[in-house]
Amino acid sequence: MAATWLKDTVFYEIYPQSFYDTNGDGIGDFQGIKEKLDYILSLGCNALWINPCFDSPFRDAGYDVRDYLKTAPRYGTNEDLYRLFEEAHRRGMHVLLDLVPGHTSEEHAWFQESRKEEPNAYSGRYIWTDSWFRGCRNMLYVSGEAPRDGTYMLNFFKCQPALNYGFLHPEESWQMPMDAPDALATREAMKDVMRFWLSHGCDGFRVDMADSLVKFDDEKKSGTTKIWQDIRRMLDREFPEAALVSEWGKPVQALNAGFDMDFYLNWTGNGYNCLMREYENHPGTDEDHSYFRRDSEHDISPFLKEYMARYLATRDRGYISLITCNHDTPRPAFHMDKEELKMAYAFLFTMPGVPFLYYGDEIGMRYRRLPTKEGGYTRTGSRTPMQWREGKNLGFSDGRPEDLYLPVDPSGDAPTVEKQEKDPDSLLQAVRSILTLRHTFPDLQADGLFEPVQAEAGRPFVYRRGSLICALNASGKEETVSVPGKRVFLLGRCEKDGDTWKMGPQSFAVFA
Ligand code: NOJ
Image (cartoon, rainbow, N blue to C red; front, side):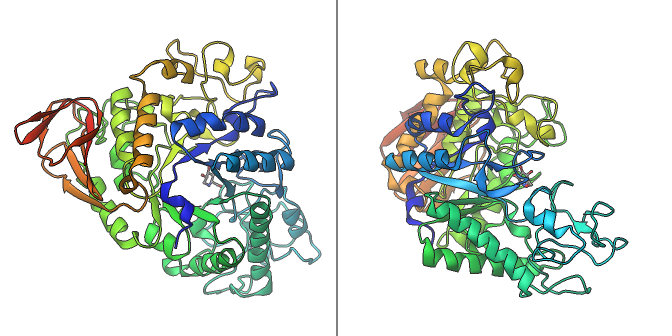
């Protein structure tokens, strides 16, 4: 059973580097997040996921953790983070930190010990072969870098050696079984990291690459699943309301492993990708077939086909998390305009499960092509500073523009919170009204039943949420839908016409 507080939760993802800088060094900080909690709450988001904010050399934006138990000084001290938890809790909000269990930075003290020639307590903390000349099968590995006679496996970038959780079917002498003392020690160490932050007030974790703790032949992820089920038992005993959301992308597996929520990630050609980013082969061109483009030719069935199977298989066990975007994904405004985004968000925020809004998507911040920063590469364009108001650095920082983590959007019409607060027709106000609607009707929240009513007869999509009916016309043309009941919410235009409703281009309505 998922943590009970998730039933009416909407998350706001914060990339801390770029959210709000209060000390003028050009990088966001905990104090900045604290000062913006009321703003986040005013949107209707009542929980945060903060990307890694731990001590790190930042070769992968903090996903290369050097010390799991210490915050990165550029964001503030551990005490500052504890105070942020308190401030959030005072407002009824929850906070997830980002747990990176699959690898550390090569600068982590565990790895510094592990790479030594003399055997020690950390020799088995990472995956090493038994000779400088032997590689790690089809996995990336590094040789010739350590005094130790062996090569070590990588989990992502070169700076991220893979932690050792053992092998499901060890085949070679250097592969340990999952219950070997060293493999169990890694698992226990990760439990201690979780205990540390949970006992200081954090409410759970987003878990990085959660599906790949066990390497090679982890059939149907059964080894990795066992580890998470064991971790879940510890949480159920010690922190029963802690919530976990996985970067897994297969909710049937992830929820079975003990996660409360699993992200529906943007993978080329999958159901989620068809909604807002179906341009993989033609980025930056007009050849975008996403359902939420007004001139799209397809209905929503490519999404539903995949989603329904997942939803039906998991609805009693936890949640699928639909996202507007994340720090690895092109922002939705890359290819969609304000009206298109309103429809996409109306849909995402009235679906079951627990939705996530990526900072800045509420104002339609753009994706920008920028030189790489902290291992971001093409992801860098989705990580630029939040645009708060007109004027210096768009209100992100009082520092010198050349010191900013990344440059702010230089366009004269860069969207800002300040402008959109004043405009009743803005994307920001639409997000607010949809999230207010979600919080008003329990049927629209995480557990309310979902059932498509009209999906394959052209562009309109009509769906039931409990006792409510939602009708969405994502197209640029007027469409007719047949829906019973009284209209209780409207974005755009929707007029009664005898027994049917005429829905204006890009309109969304809810009926009770
Ligand atoms: C997934 C994270 O979302 C991404 O940003 C990171 O680079 C990799 N995992 C490696 O930790």
